[in-house]
Length: 211
Length: 166
Image 1 (spheres, rainbow over the protein chains, first blue to last red):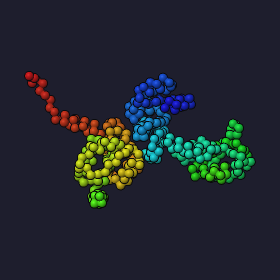
Image 2: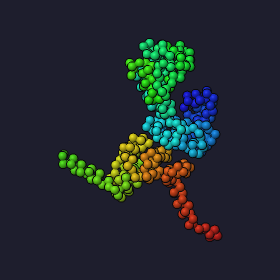
Image 3: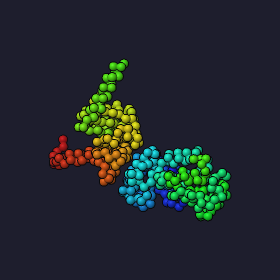
Image 4: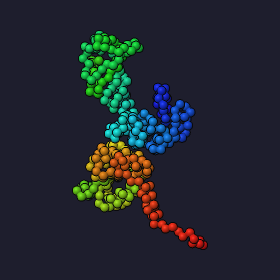
């Protein structure tokens, strides 16, 4: 909670924290430039006192799925908060939450496990971030010497439909590639793919050895 | 040994056979005072009952009349509800002591598994009102007890103030 709030504050957001542990509240209030409210997030009165009516988004990150669900639903129904986001502790609940009207539900367990799978599977494919409930993946691929696409222009490598090389990092410099950009060894490619196209995209960039 | 096994088997078959058409299949979440009361009664009345509680010790609240199934587990986990065969349930009652647990399970049962009759016990009156609007049938012990008290108060007549108190 502390690091999350600190990140949001540093990006210029106004943050109000609701926490039911009094001691934690005191500590958070001392450490952060955020409003801290002591109480239960699924209590309508507490939500009101925290200014839910004027909030642009609510983020429910308690360790209990039922609390996160009800907090988001109350924020939506009572205070018309536009964006309701919930942490899902049981990965199975991810689709349950979206069916019950939560705008975004994310499971840290699933995100972490897919990250670990990716890292252990391929050493030069990193930073896999699933977006929009895993419908889109952002992946960083490092081109090795034996990659079949080295020396080729982007437009000639036959990248699959619904996928994109969004940017390229060469010796620490950011390049926004075009069709004529030539790929080089050691390039870090930031690709945007769907779960259906990711396999093919990686095969093209790294050759058959990793498939 | 083999005889014992057989008789147990027969009983099991009997149980399956009694899941007949005129018997309701009811899932009850929470085996506290309310949950166990309902489970005991419904089971005695011949309904097919499955009761779920996260704490095994609470099954001690069930009486000898209870002939249904018990599942030890967290009913906010879909896997536990599936184990209880929620897709076949005619009714579900969420009677844990946590409002949010009851609200979540009731919504899963109603909206995802289309259980025809879903009821949830809710202590918080404000929360009850909001979720009733969502189509969840809620029962609030607070408002029920309050209504009865108020109704009973209506019968009270004003005491004659001039009457001397001894």
